[in-house]
Length: 425
Image (cartoon, rainbow, N blue to C red):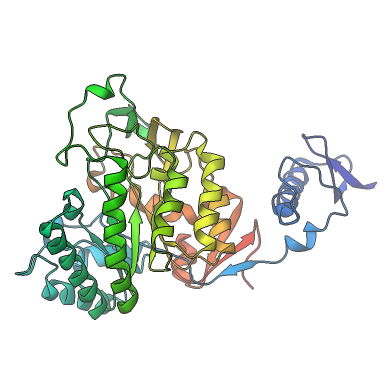
């Protein structure tokens, strides 16, 4: 006997062809088909928890893949094969990245020229090294010593070096410069045991935070901080536009610290979302954007799972995300741990769907990884975090144009998100 109705554990009904009684194998296949239909019902505004009947429109939408041929996986300075002293573009590190489907690299420079800026010879060497391996030198991380300086001629000299660095980046074809506003060091004050003997770095706001000594920059009020940011953006972004180099600001880590913490009223406090809006509006340009670290941003939210989504949507629609750090956390504002991506509270699948829909053109980069004594330098943890955006929870497949990348489940080529179980023709 055939029936066209199957009842899910939620109590709703979907149409599906099945035999009665259902054998175990058929039951599993039914659940997969039902899950796919429910999952992609969101296209019509129906959530996973909402009602769906057998005649709902999303059935056809579930069969249609929406593409983003620009999004890709990137590698950076958080995990380097070989010696850091030898640089990031050694044959050992480039081969390490390629083994895991990574063809776009963000680097740090080790040398300085006579003017204190980046060494053009080192830049050219890095570019030549990447070209030999077919890797794109996509971005450079910029240190932020200048940010601690107050008004005066020394600040202008530092900004002149920054402007010179932008020109040097453009000369070797680098299109992104990332940077951090850090008047006090990144804050972590605890370690938590993690799975498999790993250790998670975490932070909990101290009860006695008002008694902590001020940082090297001294007292920095909110007005002072925003004056520095405005001064920087109004001078740097026009040059970045001229040389076609996008500036990508990484939020301070963690956001949301109370004003006066170690003497600083951090720019991304008390509301990280409102601060991001204010920052990008000072000079409203596609060259003034963000290296949006999901973990860092989530650290400043009370409910990161839901509150991160409108931030990604807002910046993505405006073309203000130049790079993504795929870091996940447990917890949130003032109390969090950095964990493996599948353990965290943020749903990378939903985030990647937003990035797909807004045609995000940049890199998904693995970021901070849990530590283990058997994995110095995170050579094991990093490939897992590289591959995770491709799986994002197992609910859909992120297929890539590169056959090697498909085997590794790494989005290094042209990316398309397909319904679960479907493959590229």
